[in-house]
Image 1: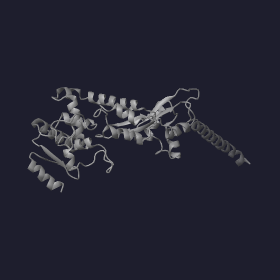
Image 2: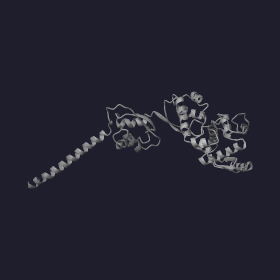
Image 3: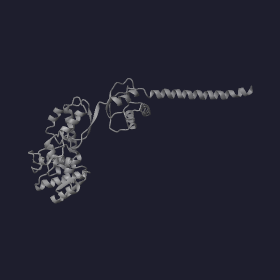
Image 4: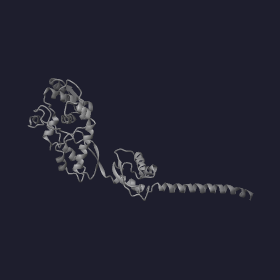
Length: 331
């Protein structure tokens, strides 16, 4: 009997500990569940939230927390993992609200983007830019309207990766590209002012260099060679200008079909085999590297260049050396 009485305090202690643990578990569970609830159900103010390409789930969760759109980064990560959303959350711009539950926030990030990423490659002509928008099915983008707006802007439709509203119009897209060009070229204002060339001349040459070379150092070499030809009154003989003059090749399904020998005889102001000097306008839309290379060409005595099948450049100061490079590297 005495032993049973002595066991009572131990039983009470164990019961108290159990009760405390159970209470903590229940409180923790309730608290954890609240992390999945809206930050503030009484707020109806929309907040714009953009996710750049390649941003990690950890970074997204931190930014959502900082914006007051979720209560817990851990809860966000758990829900994303549980629902296998790691690869489904989209890059783009979203409208979120503090009154959204965590589940609604994650769902919106996988389905509700208001924008699309558009990548315009360096060296594209305006038609290729317009065709890219058509392929991505921007409902309010009118190809004909864009090409009319851009007819005198070749060279100034800056190639880059853009986050574009799905409702963007031809005018809105044109303004986006040209405004970006203005900002980019402003970073080179001193170099342009110190050049003995006009901005138009720089852009025309950069548009050729972009099509004729790859890689910054190679672009600089090509730019130097083409400026050398200009300086001595030699025809530029740039195949890219023939391609621009010929336009779209239906057989090869490209705007940049390999020129034929007879193309060198075509009557066009863009035929730099027949006409010395620069063509009348840019033939493509160059990136910043091509423009910089044109402003800062590599000095050399070279007048000729070719690129082999690997893209490597081979240069020569004489026509004989040029023919030798062709025989060695292209035949």
